[in-house]
Image 1: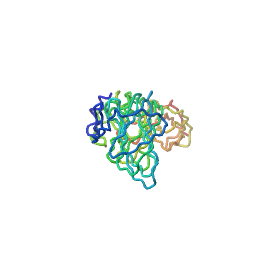
Image 2 (image 1 turned 180 degrees about the vertical axis):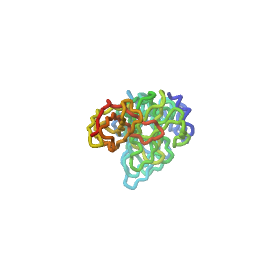
Image 3 (image 1 turned 90 degrees about the vertical axis):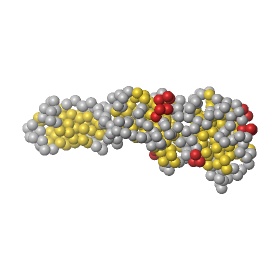
Image 4 (image 1 turned 90 degrees about the horizontal axis):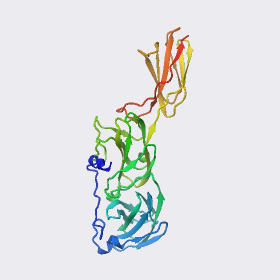
Length: 363
């Protein structure tokens, strides 16, 4: 699955910052004291203090006994502070897998990284520093459904299961930080209806692109390159999977600070409503049971095979419609089906099966 991703992410691939295991140095830093082997094991929920010294990089070692979210907390600064810090996470092999530039601006800074079970090294560096020291701490929350930063390659994807919502943390783009896009891979079945859900594009003040992409869709830049033959839907869209195989959920934040989001693909089983019909004068009233979050299509004809049938589309969650201008004393056949709401007209709309056919003789 991860190998497939490499073919579709071209210019988005960022430098992995691979380093020799020992000694290992952060980007552009050659001070000998910054070797990774100077790291000391840190306990969770314990305050530590770093005393800044020029461009020195300070190393910390944390061990996770299960998958979850590592929180890196930097204490609150003075109200007029302009301190900036560079925080990075490395694998046990010395490969950089996450980096962010923290602009404190006089407030506490909390950063979150989804990680698999294992040992990691966290580096702290003062970029613009006006205080002699900073207090910080690490916390950990178990989470088996979170976006996992790569242990080997920066752009490895996180596997996603259908009907499970995942927690992700979109990194900021401030100061050239690299953690500004996340990708997931999910296997879907051809012909099945699904709904793609992600709230990453709804956060105020954030500029985020959220798409569910097919295996042939490329992301040459931060905006997916979509042709007529490509599959691409937006958050909130209901769709029918065009093939059985892997699809990629893509989240990109090209401007804004780090924030939490939820993402997932849910299987949709459209239900046929229960229908009743009553006769009126040259009309018929069709009523049906409510199916949440969908619209409806009513079809009627003068024959049981619905040859030459006419249809009425019903929106706004209405559960009845009156069909007018029918022929008096004529028998009509009526059926109703639910239709998934979708904003994407390039995809086949998802319909339920037809309801049981009802008949009515118009007055």
